[in-house]
Image (cartoon, rainbow, N blue to C red; front, side, top):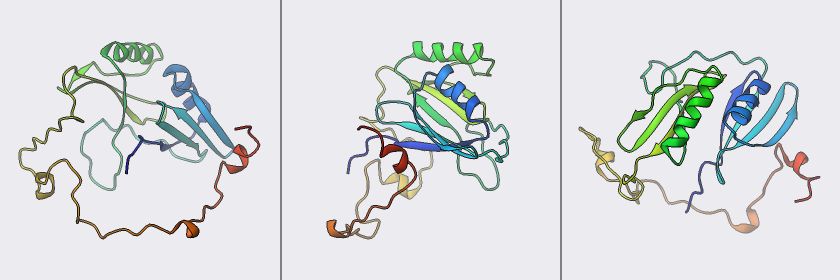
Amino acid sequence: MKYTGVNHIAMVTKDIDTTIRFWRDLLCMRLILSMGKPGYRQCFFEISENDMILFFEWPDVEEIPIKDHGVPVKGAFAFDHLSFGVESDDELWEIKAKLEAGGFWVSEVIDHGFIHSIYSFDPNNIPIEFSAPVKGVDLRTKPLLKDRCPTTVISEGSEPQKGKWPESRLTPPQDRDIYPGEGKDYIKDNPY
């Protein structure tokens, strides 16, 4: 199995126009699909050749409180922040300047040893990070597992461990039904 990236991460906004202004116009991510109607819209933004983010517009959603990146919380919680990769420190400085010019708080550039990062929030209070690689450090080719007190599972290493889950059985081709979903009506009239 080969993953190609994050197809999309779905988030929510109360105000799609402000969200588009931020992601498309300030951060220069192309708006590549918009569909729906007032009360329920979806807008997809292109991050890279393989990766997108999606915003649902739900007019009755309540604003989320600001929560600092990486700071532990108590209670029900599933998401901390999004980090977008950029090619170089120069791009970090460019994004920092854009965010500050747009009136958004943005951190200083932080050196994490393997990436340099800046932190901010989008107009929906979603915590975001932008990260540039540090030359000579590539954790994908040489993973670094340095947990000071690793769990048993971490101690097993970076590679997927076989036999830890039941064997899967593929659905035979003749039984692979695909059901219509949202977007099908929007795409069907396009000359692809």
